[in-house]
Image (tube, rainbow, N blue to C red; front, top):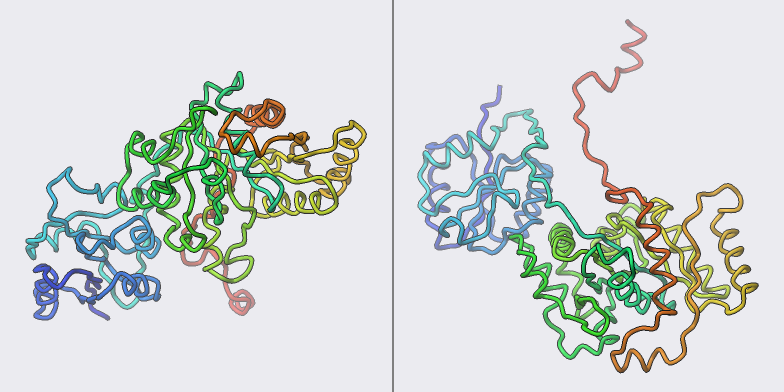
Length: 439
């Protein structure tokens, strides 16, 4: 029978005295443990996902590697995280609220380590399983704000309609009670800074996500990262400064930033891309991480506004985006289809509505989405945007009214949830056919 012991991962600096002490204790047998030293956060990630079981991860807070994504990776692989932090209580990040099992002092004693391991970690033998207790995973903060996603293929005017929706939700009767809106630019190619003639490029989305990596900022701190668009009655969160900056948006940190934004504002209007591809669709985890903003927001939005244009290509793009959202798990009753720059005549709009119903399958028994809502073309819109003026009511009123009605009828809660693991006891999956025949 294999002797059980703790298998520990460690990441510290060259000047961390505890790092050397734990290695010495493990070598001389003062603690029943194997200690695996790591030289970088990337090595920790690789070892956590290697398939080898670990009891705990000891990591120095001064390395700067402790964040939501690392803690989430450790939790998914059933590894307790013990953060070594010499900061006075209350002065630094609340590591246990972020998911760490315990916080240890830099002057770590052997008894303190053994007590922490005995409370939070499991010994590993030849066939030890480390079940994850859901009670050990902290619940995310309650998101109070309504989340509205606005998307569409390029050239449909989705970004302009996102501005119109943010302005309309802050002024329309029946939606003022939701609270002050914030327009968040969460596209890979961010255009809201240009459309608002923003003279500053910071702070923005990158600063918001970075603020949520290792703590939970207060609502006033989140609001301070946005700009007040006085003429239109909403705040603006600037987007990525360059397309390639998506690489710094780690999934858990972005989710936390989105929750923080919803806690700070009554309504979040997110201008997002229509690309929802992930690893399941194309086999690439890089593509899934690149699309983390669109995928996360679509899954959690209370309503998704899909913008299309009239004509063959415009209707094709509208239906294609609606189908992508359906495949992603967004319920049809939360999707609002909008035809921007629609036909002026009632006959022309009726033909567009009929075409959309045919292409989306609503007329042959398919599940119908809400709409389409027809938004007329507005001349002189470029001049209004250039001068920073208020958007006309003919642009804001049709879609805001339809959206308010959808929000009043849509079920409360996230649109789609990720499947959670279900524990299986030995024997629950059945037995081999040969055994059944012998029995």
